[in-house]
Length: 96
Image 1 (cartoon, helix red, strand yellow):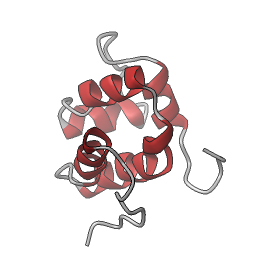
Image 2 (cartoon, helix red, strand yellow; image 1 turned 90 degrees about the vertical axis):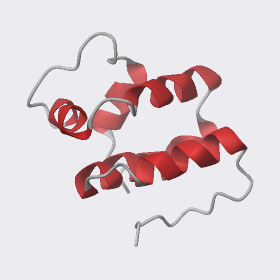
Image 3 (cartoon, helix red, strand yellow; image 1 turned 180 degrees about the horizontal axis):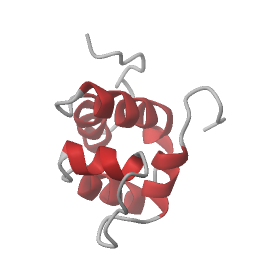
């Protein structure tokens, strides 16, 4: 079970692929962080934000989790507004 509650119906192929990849990271913690964020935001992300997300999900889970939890600083190559949104995201608290 993935935990995904949003249907990918109505999304273009790029968004469907990203939604799937965010929910199937390899570690449960990252599935929950990125999957929940993607469920909430995927339909409204701009093309630039989609590209940023595609780039960000290439970061290995341990490194990305450590950066999102504040244990390490995210390298400038990967940090940006979308990373900051994901880091600040709390399901149910934001009206995205």
